[in-house]
Length: 453
Image (cartoon, rainbow, N blue to C red; front, side, top):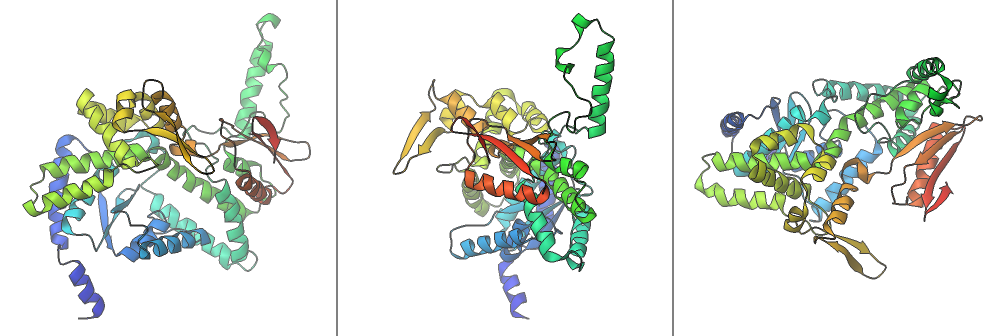
């Protein structure tokens, strides 16, 4: 027996694959009795080192190479070795079949918890409307093909690694400046056709009944409406870009659209998975010796964090509260139609805010001050602040406002009361200039005054 085989045998002495299959069948039986409907799940066993690699590439079995993913891996590896950061119990991707990773080092009770947790995640991926356009049945092959094409560009002597990575750097700087709400985007020709029809119909009306908003519409204008999908704008209007660059924009945009629903439902997704692993494991006939370790692991997952919101904690609390007050059917309704923002608007009240001990604080130069607590006056402010910092709300939003006569992009920041950090904003503008060399004019608000970067 080799050293590797000996270590693997020792690490897996608590369980075997046949046991995992048996427990998975029991989990599935209970989950189906409650009406959960999930994709088939393929479990892959990996060691802690491989798990770090999966984390760095968002769990994708095949993903294009880029230095930023290697940096993420090395950072995680270093912090793990220093004992400053742990690894997640599980990692599952939104695909059909779902792919979930189990760490070889986990004991049996933890593998059972993870499989129940993954069942909840897969059910959420399949049924929440935010994921309707993610095409889980083709995502793995799509990522594999994207990696193959990018490797081809890197190996092309006329392009090379440096040009490819530099261009991807620029795309990553604005990768989430795309349609965040799942609305279909109209092309320039569709928008032009829309305005032609509006103008023609308006001309048929009496002068007093005409729409004043159409009075100054110039149908020959380069941009008839602001474009909030910056990457699609580049694809459609970037005549200066080469074919390989357009392909890279498409790859990064497709990946962003795939991940945005996960960003927008982090609290609900983790809450739903935790809600179901807790419910399922209470109904499983677990050996007595696993009861306390299971509860300890569960409590570790959903414990509140100091200075920031733990999505597992908040999501689990919300689903338990909804079940208690409105029943399990309401939980399934939330799972189907809501994202984090809409769920918090509907279900976070003063009582919840107090139960969760939510508060807002601000950091001064030498000290921290508590700004709001969950009382009758403060809880609404806390709720609004929380909503402003979940999902894509935590990211600045910018859009193409116009294109000048000199072909400069006029980009505006949707200022929501939070000023941009100028150091980062200036770097983003420099990356935008690589994507649109003819010029960028970037407008925002700094300290309540208009500001151009």
